[in-house]
Amino acid sequence: MAREYLKKATLTARSDASDTHEIVTKILADIEEGGDEAALRYAAQFDKYEGSILLSEEEIEAAAALVPEKLKRDIQFSHDNVRRFAEAQKSTLQDVQLEVVPGLIAGQKAIPVDGAGCYVPGGRYSHIASAIMTVTTAKVAGCKHITACSPPRPGVGVNPAIIYAAKLCGADKILAMGGVQGVAAMTFGLFGLPKANILVGPGNQFVAEAKRILFGRVGIDMIAGPTDSLILADKTADPEVVAADLVGQAEHGYNSPVWLVTDDRALAEKVMELVPQHIATLPDVNRENATAAWRDYAEVIVCADREEMAATSDDYAPEHLTVQAEDLDWWLGRLSCYGSLFLGEETTVAFGDKASGTNHVLPTSHSARYTGGLSVHKYMKIVTWQRATREGAKPVALATARIARLEGMEGHARTADIRLKKFFPNEEFDLTAEE
Image (cartoon, rainbow, N blue to C red):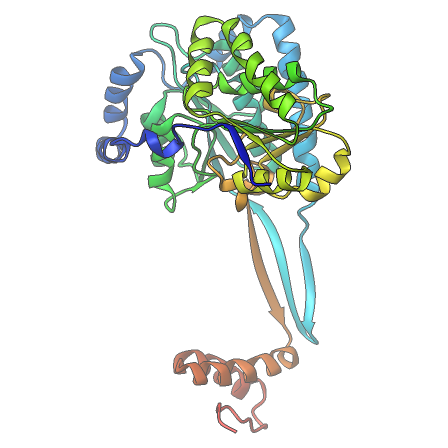
């Protein structure tokens, strides 16, 4: 049985193409040339904010005082979980060394980048959790300087809970600036900030495009598109839970795809009946986003069996993948293309988004086919080193000289020759590539 689409998307992420690239390129060039003054002009234009750009310790403390104690405890809980998981991830990175041949030792060393720039969205929604996810992992990785950057609200500033979370998680500086100008300020080292070596965190299409353009000058976590989610469900799944989970992800934005893949037609039909009912009960802005996402981008697919369901999921390579089906261990072993996996109805994407410990900065737009999400590893440079005794260098130098000459790289060959002659003046060596 081929996949049967009970609901097919009429739009994709590519449908939303615009002149974003040209706009972002111009803004970046203006700010690189004009520095702080140019960044402030764009902040006034786009953020409509003229308050403090780099928050002082007094301003951070004042913002923290506005955060309710219950929310502070929730932020601390989330931070603790993310930190513990990040520390476990870091423990998998070990410095190693190996005696490749007698007398020649090669090694690997993991070194954190110096400066991290963490972008925390604050436009449509105030992403407190993004501050936790990005800053905590940078801190655990060992970055020497961490800047958190978030767009201020006109006449108000950055959400106090974002400020509190960023400071708690280890941000050295907090920048009240959004969009391309915020990304540029961290990259170019404006306002007295150290230049960022890596930019991380989600953002709108302008932030994503700025990161794409700047990649190479700085590292980035990934190039993110609209968030997406896929649910694999069989006859044992609760359609109310499935529908709620689909709507919970569709509210991200008008172009956030959600997909249901099942081998049970009755479940699919029931979920399609329930989703509009769930959407109708959302607050206005959330309802508008979810309505458009479900109407234009959502898909419902019926497959023959669980193997076809798994293959379909791997083809879609979703950012978030939920399994609400029997035999969860089978799914864990079978599935291979996803940003983060949620097994069973006892967990959900929102848990990972907010507080469970795994990171919510994840690959979108099918890029889970080749990469994972944000982790301490993204902030680490895996470098190599080597050391040799003279005897250990001998066979390597001989092979190097002959291979280099075969390639036509005489200069390379001579760097091996000179060592052989210096280290072993009384020996004769065959340094040609021919028999």
